[in-house]
Amino acid sequence: MAMAYSIKGDGEAILWLHGLALDSTLWDGFTDELPQFKHLLVDMPGFGQSGQMPAPKTIEVIAQQVKAVLDKEGIAQASVIGHSMGGYVALSLIAQYPGLVTRLCMFHSQPYADDDAKKADRKKLMAFIKKNGTEPWMKEFYPNLFAEDNRAQLALTIKLLIDKGIQLHQKAVINTIEAIMNRPDRSAVLENFKGPVLFIVGKKDEAIPATKSLAQLNLPKQSIAELLDYVAHMGIFEAPNKTKKAIKALMLLPI
Image 1 (tube, rainbow, N blue to C red):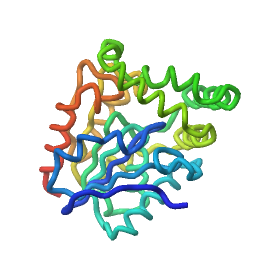
Image 2: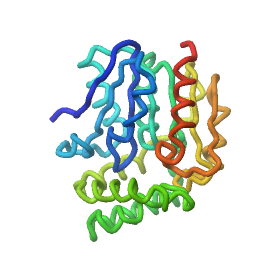
Image 3: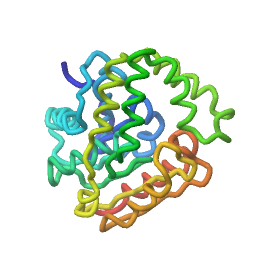
Image 4: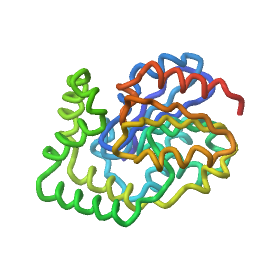
């Protein structure tokens, strides 16, 4: 079964990669800000229109499946915007396919592997979902991606995410959490990457501690950062204008 995706526009390619329990509709409104580019939006295995596709248990295999889409469309190089898990997949693409990625946006993402405590938490979460299904977790997961002060204003967005999320297959969610848990450290990938890297960091992010988000800023040779004061893990919704502007600035940089 092939990965579902859509293409819009023409020109230099941008690959948009969503995070865990999300899909390519995450980027609605972002691609319109960059009409001069070709946009490739994928639904990663187990999510969105790829919901019936088995979800791999490694980030490396997910990256290989994304690469197959790029090959099918004849895209030899692309800038990559990766939200959360999408950033992990982006770093795997860089590691596996040198020269493929020209610019990178780590959108609420980071290169570090899980420590033992985080792995233990993920194992507990997988056991909980296996026992109770996805719905109880989804009702807690999505609101916690937003800064507390933003939840009331974005209540409808959060509800829509929950309504969609509870329909996901339990195995897809568990397999993807396992893939995230077992990902390797990719700090060296960022250090050796020659293109410009944009880091979008929410200072209220509980999913990725600020210490890790800030530590990575000095790894790449070309690094720019958008630090968002009142944002957690969903700057796409919490600060759309600022994040769109930051990505547009990244795409103006030479490669």
